[in-house]
Length: 215
Ligand SMILES: [Fe+2]
Ligand SMILES: [Fe+2]
Image (cartoon, rainbow, N blue to C red):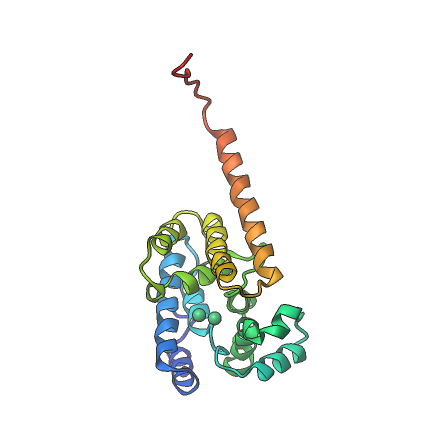
């Protein structure tokens, strides 16, 4: 992982130790590790996955007004749901911190950081694995639902993203939280892609005629 130097990694870890609680640092390290292992599965650059994973939550503990101010200054589109819940901006703002504080200039990595909470229709495979790693890292729990998502995440990226969106949306509905329109757009886009690739593989499959048992 030459591109993501040990010095920069240590610099980020030192900064995190000062700016987020220890439990969050542990989550970040698990996201880094999960993202690396998913990257290996899908032949994505491991250093990119490590870097995006390690930096995805830089702005997690920024105050709501700081998040809003930084997002506004960067010219980001701010939805009414962001205004009601500025914490949702921490993903986009973490990408700003990665660029401004740590000199990250690779758009792929910045996008993966920015997309880790709400996703984005058509997001890159690197964004997909950081999005999945954030929700599915081992510290999130050991329920049958999460374990199924973990299994799917190693088999089908599109399917894993929509199923993980549904998992999060279900939680938001059950707890009567606001739903950001981008979370729905992400879910719809990935569901459609997953259905399309299913149709595609079905049309390529050899035709097998099975006689109906009642026939
Ligand atoms: Fe986050
Ligand atoms: Fe996170």
